[in-house]
Structure formats: C-alpha cells, structure tokens
Length: 149
Image (cartoon, rainbow, N blue to C red):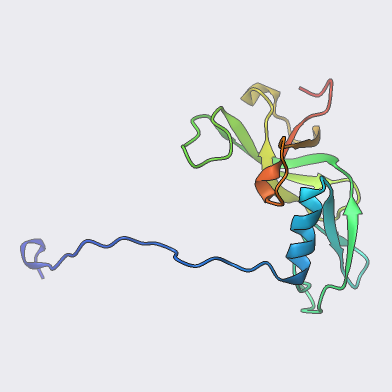
C-alpha cells in the first residue's frame, strides 16, 4: 500500500485507571509518609528495596518488611541535563541506582547532586524528604553526604 493510500486516524493514548498498592506496597508507602524506607526480607535473607509482593526469584510471598538505612551508595547513574516538565526536579539531576545501607538490591531514585561533575559511582548519598511527606515515592530523593560532592 502506498503512503498516499494508507489510512490514518488520530489516537490519544491514556491510562484511565489507578493502581492499587496491595498490602506490601501500602506498608512501603506508609513508611515513606513517616520518613522511613522499608525493604522486603527474602527467604534467602537478602533485603530487596523497594519491596515487592513476591520474591522475583522464587515467587514466594513476601512476609517480612524491615527498615533500611536512609543513606547508601550510588551504584550507577544517568544525568538529566534538561529536565522535562513531568520530571521530579526542575533543575538538572541524576537518576541513580542507590543501594541503601541494609539492602542487598539498589533502587532507582533521584539524586540532587548540583552538577554532573559532582555525581560519582560509589559516592555516598543520604535521603532528603519532601517538606510534607504524603506516602509517594516522590517524597524521597537523595543528596550527596557532606564532603562527597
């Protein structure tokens, strides 16, 4: 079919539903509201952050949530030099894999380092909480530990 004879129609993609959190992520969100971070203790004893309803390796239901530290180490990162309107910060920042103290897996989260030159794999970061925590992942971002940036 040639381009001149192809059919087209306007289409607007939208997600008109809301996701329910379930028992594990509800506890995670409530902890965020209380300025705490919870991870899931898996059957092998490792701690996964953020928690999931089921262990991704064994499919076993997650039963125990444990608090992990508010600080951790940047494992990897990508710099966002020109944030878009829907992104969490209006100034340049990094999306980073941050492995928190007490966790065995990293979580993806925002690091507000000030500049790309200040970001380093292996740097220590600590939690920065929004002024009014509401139980959303956007309540949390990370900043370099004093002396790291």
